[in-house]
Amino acid sequence: MIKRKKRAIGIISLMLVASVSIYAILWALRDNIVFFYSPSEINQKILSDSLEEKSFIRLGGMVKESSIVKLNNGFISFVVTDFNKEIKVIFKGIPPDLFKEGQGVIAEGSIGRDYTFTASSILAKHDENYMPPEVEKILKKEGFE
Image 1 (cartoon, rainbow, N blue to C red):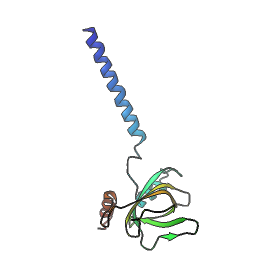
Image 2 (image 1 turned 45 degrees about the vertical axis):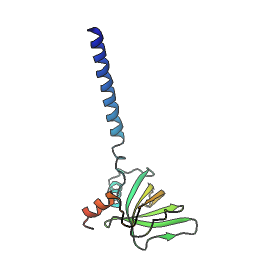
Image 3 (image 1 turned 30 degrees about the vertical axis):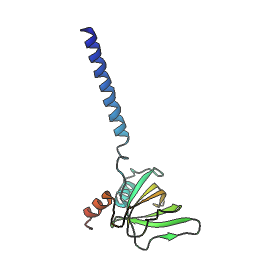
Image 4 (image 1 turned 90 degrees about the horizontal axis):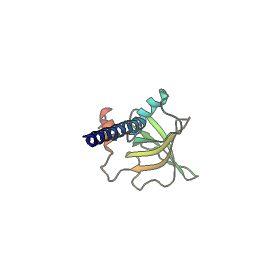
């Protein structure tokens, strides 16, 4: 009887510790669980001061038509839009082969004081008709299809 009681207390204690640990992890990651933020969401976070400068985030949206500019120093500049707000993105490197204007994109990086997003990597779509589901959902919410 005493062994069963000790075993039950041990199991309950282990479950309690595991539950508290999982809760603490999810609480700490609550803002990072979102796969990416749209330009409108980033603008709201900037206005509410809930976005720290140089914090790692993912920006998702559409590459604005006629916005891609190749600069002399190996950088490219383009604008990501959700057709409500726009954010200028700077990226140094070679973009994916499927990266082009009018297509869905997710850029990983940070936003600076001048509201320019500095991307460390760019993720592009997989085929001609693909759009990230999150971008499609945001566009439908904004009234674009």
